Image (cartoon, rainbow, N blue to C red; front, side, top):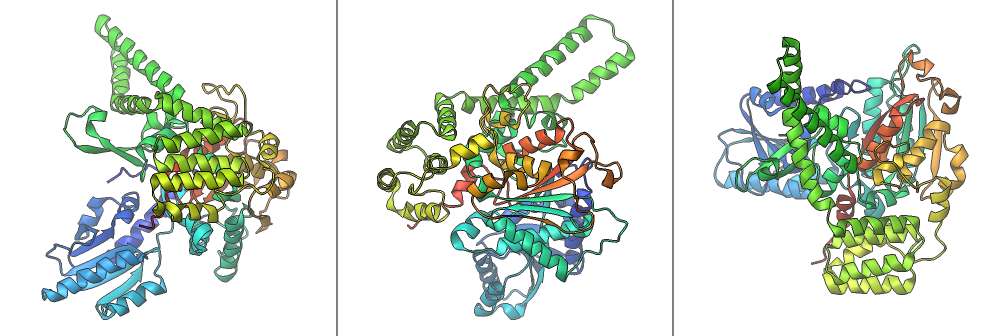
Length: 594
């Protein structure tokens, strides 16, 4: 299981949120007396590993199994299923019960839905005639702290479901998760939302507060001052670009999952043929915390400097007489050696991807598309990718990027590329292209693109970015400042009003509301000099930025960079439906008709 993140340095008490989720699960298990077999759906097991340790489950007489089509092999007579409300998972449960019945096993069955059941689920159990044998409940796990400043609602398909399928149930879940935070930390007084889904979430949140109010006594100042909700749809340029921070590149190439990456042990210097190993990646690792948000170019230099300094210390140790305290300092440095080795191995592995001419050419092309000045070159590049049979996801990422920055493709080119894609990759991908069209990510050009105006107004392209000593968030993409984070920057500093004209050029409505007497009448502009908000009694103000539809690690790095700037009077916590990269986000739209 992944290493649970250390939450001691979180700007609010996230450990209490985790503890509450842990207690709720333990209570469910305690109420089922005796030994039991806990069968968890694969996807959930990763999330659970960030909430509770396996050893703690075993203390409560639990045997752990993963849910699959295979019948459960266990001596236990009590089977507890912990699943998301997905039809395919319920089919497995029904087949397990039918299998047990055919073999004459006498067992008790419990099904707990995460975070809550859906009516359709119970219907399936009734149709399969197993309803009477089940005890059904809910395990309300709405949010998971992934790190000291990241909360995930673990809604993988939220973006695709709301844009393509018209299913907005995830929006209720997001509002519920935020409302749960309000019960712990007080009603958030200032709410700013941009995008159709975000404005809906803000409305649902207000409705929840009216129906099930958080009793905020007059004395208690809410711990979170401002909530900014942002639809992924508002900025699809950023996730389609290759992230260039250390953590972003780890996700692009190795896929960070529940705070760890899984890779061949040989990459990490462990000589075990064909063995995979999990490497935890969170702020409990001091070195990782220091380098995760840096541009990868700089990370290699930092690791080199640290290794050189350690080598010098070692030379001094062996050639001169040391005092006891000097020895102690040296041993302390040696303790960080495993972390050093880990990141040198990871960085070396990443370099094998980032030094490829094809990767560098791709970066060049992404920048050309963001500049939106040379359409023909971009079109030809994509055409060539198709002819070279490059991975479909890579082509779709480039196509989405070109379509958005160019305001769509001319009809002739649109039809031509669509035809070429289907010929080269198979007609079963027609459903994928339809999904992208439905989501507005791939379209025919109907009017002139407003991307140039947005780019200029928000200063999204920053020339001569110094990645080693950055003075702007653009360092995370080596010259492109993420549009999403520029919007957050403005929303925090002075609200939506000064940038309303730009907001109108971007997808979806926007809203701004004050929800309690603690709502700030002043804008943050007037408090830029004060490094703390007076209302919070000497604490820095806290802003919760929620991405509806997913956020990339590069955007989180940019937000951390903002928060660390001199004169910034706030800390930032990021909430998201899911941590995504261009690849994982594009994959949600892929649907085979075969």
